[in-house]
Structure formats: structure tokens, C-alpha cells
Image (cartoon, rainbow, N blue to C red):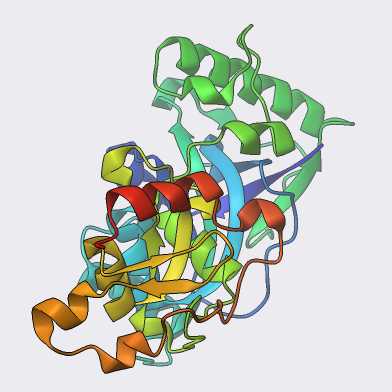
Length: 309
């Protein structure tokens, strides 16, 4: 199995290590190129900048996406490694030097990050070159990757027993899990949910096909507050006004992916012509994978518990 050791900003690391979030955005200031070094579910380790030549933690790679800086902040907030948007923007601007108001940045989304105590930091592998700018891929099939993998695995087990890493990250006998097996167990955070839903619907409103990204929002079909999961099959990408109507019960969707608009809009507001034009409309865009499409049980829950008849 392959895993990645990424060169990590020391301030970013320290800020997040103090907070211990459930997910992080390991961003890059440039908005070109995709991260394809490892598969989803693989380990992504944090190698601090020199002179701190240590591996100090890591996370599980979920997805790489190129997003406007503003959307990255809306999705992840402080989990971008900054206390506020102004600071985040300045961190990006200092590296880009182009003065763009809302630049596209690379977002590598990591779930369940872990941060080792200072006395457990791991020295960099002997083949690490000071000329490496972004990071390096290692394999568990040969050294030094195998040795590093084993050492990290032991620390993950130890932190799991101390309850600082989720039990979902290990098997029943305490062995760390990775790759596709990890993805079936992973606890996806709110930020990752938003990005995954946005990309799954190809950055278009599911019902109208609207492409204007700033007005598109990831909606839970069964709300998170009602134990709805942060899974793609419990999500819809909707135009912001439709998201509001959906959450308030004036709009729902059917199991065969059609929109259904409540008569209560007309009864309560004596309006709604633009929305009734959507009644019975088939989704303009739906996920390609069957497992990513809205799950019937969540749709049924929304139909019965939220939709106003």
C-alpha cells in the first residue's frame, strides 16, 4: 500500500494540534493540478518544515478538490488552520502574490487527523531529500516505507487506547485500518460532506442544474440534528433558496428523483409560481454512482417527517 508524507506548515500544524479537529483541509495556495499520489483511505502524514525534520502526525486522505478560497473557508472554517477568514486569506496571499480576491486553491481533505505528542515525533526517513517541496510517496512493500508505516501504526494504536483517535480507525483487535476498509468506517465531517456533495453533483443544483457555485449548498436529507449521517447518499446539492424550502418542508424529493412542491407555499404566501414550475421535475443532475444517490430511507423520512402536506 502507498502512503504520502506531505511537507507541512509548522504554524498550520500547531494551530490544529491544539484544537484536535475531526477533519482538516491540507491546502495548497495554487489551484492547478490534482493530488493523485495515493488512494482514498490511505495515510497522509505531516512532515514539519525544517529545522523540525520530523513526522508529527497525519490523517486519512478522503478527496482532493480545487475550490474558491471563500468556499474552502465556508466548508472548513478553523479547520483550514487559521482562526478567521482574514488570517486564512493572508496566509494564501503571502504565498500567491497575485492579489486575487477569491483565488482557487487546492484542498486535500483529511479525516480523523492525529497529532503526536512532541516526544513521539518520528525522525524523517533516511532517504528524505531537503529539496522535496510538497512531499513524497512511500510504499509499505519496502524500506524505509515499511519501517515508517509500522512505527506510525504503533502510535495510532497507542493513541486509540488513550481515546485520542476514533475507534473506527482500528479493527476489533486494535489494528489500524486503511484504504477501502477505512472508508466504510470513516466518520466524515461537515466540511468534507459539503465538498463531497458538491463534487458528486458536478457543482450543479440537483433540481435546477444551476451552476453558480456561491449560491449552491449541500443539504442533508435527514438532518444531522436528527442523526442523519454526513454521507453523500444523505445529501443534495441545492440552490440556497431551495435548500431553505427543503429544510422547512415546502419542498421534498421522491424516491425516483423528482421534485415535489408543497401546496402550503400558495396557501401561506399567496405566491410561489417559480417554485411550482419545479413540481414533478426530474433531477437536472444526479450522482453517477448508485451508492451515491439519495438513499430511499432518507427520502422517505423527509417525506413523512418534514414535508408539509
